[in-house]
Image (cartoon, rainbow, N blue to C red; front, top):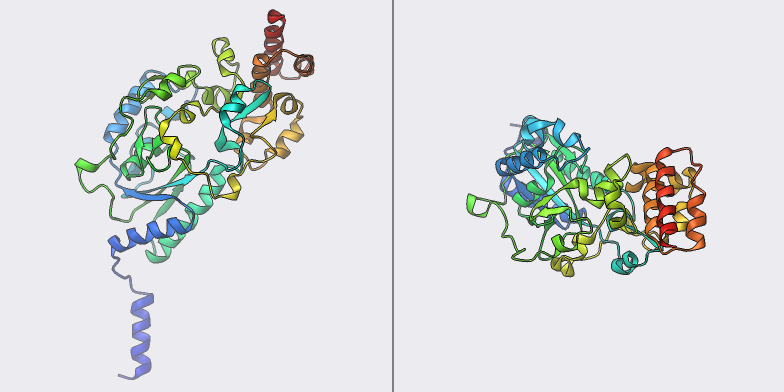
Length: 376
C-alpha cells in the first residue's frame, strides 16, 4: 500500500474515528487541569445523594428556607443530578479559596459600630463570574479529549446540592454550621461543579469512605457565636434567623427581633467561620479578582449610606453585592446605623433618608433614629 494512503488511514483513525478513552487517566488529567486553572482541589463523585435528599426535605418541612421558594420549587431535581441534567453520570466538584489578602481584621471591624462589615467573600469581583469562566475552561478541555461528551457548568446558579456533592467528592466534610470544611483550608472557599455524562473514576471507591471523616468533634464554636442563633442544632441552619439571609435574600422588612443582633453587618455574616478553629489554617486567595475593592473591608457606614443609586451601581458593577439593589442596601445600612454609637453625624445621615421614595428605606431609617432617641 502506498505510503500516502497509509498515512491518510492513520490520520483518519486518530482524528475521525472515536477513540477509546481511559477514564482513569482522564480523571487524573482533569485534576491536573483544575490545579492549573487555579482551583485548590478537584474531586469526582457519582450522583447518588439519598441521605442529603432526606435532610433537604426535612429542612424544607421545617420552613427553614423562609422566603427562598426556589429551594423547594425544583423538587427532587436539586438532589438528583440526573433529573436536573438527563444523562449525568458524574459530578466534578471544585474548590477555590476566596479570603482576600491584606484586609482589615474582621473582628476589629465588627466591633467598631461606625464601620460597615461586608462578608469577606463579597469584597471583590462576583465569584459567579470568576468560577464560571474557569469551570467553562475546564469543561472545554474535557470536551477536547472526549469529543461529544456533555459537560454542564454550575456556580451556585441552579438547584444543586453543592456541599453534599463536594463532600462526596472528598473535598471536605460538612461542618456544624453546614459549610464545607477542610483541615488544610478551613472554609473560606467557593464551590463549583461540572455535570458530565462521562463515567469518570470517582474518589470514594466504596461506602466506607463515601464521606470524609468529620473533624468537628465536640466543638460548638459556630453555634455559640451566631448573633441570631440561626444554627438551631448541629448541621441545621434556620435561614429565617441568619444574617446572610436577612441582608441578602429577604426582600421586605427585617423583623424587629433581629435588628439589634445584626450589629454593623450590612451584607452577609462571617461569624461562624471566624470562630471556627479550622480557619486558623485558612489560606488567602491568590486570585486578584477577589481582592477587596474601594476600601470596603474597612469603610464607614455613614459614607456608604450617602451613596446614591448611580454610585451604588457604578461601584458594585461586577460585584455580588450588586444583586441586592440600592434599596435593600440602604435598608441594611439603616439598621446598622441604628446600632451605631450615637452621634450628630449618624443622626444627620439617617435623616437624609426620611423622605426617600422607598417606604422600606423610610421605615428602617425611622427605626434607626428612634434607637438613638431612646438611648439619649
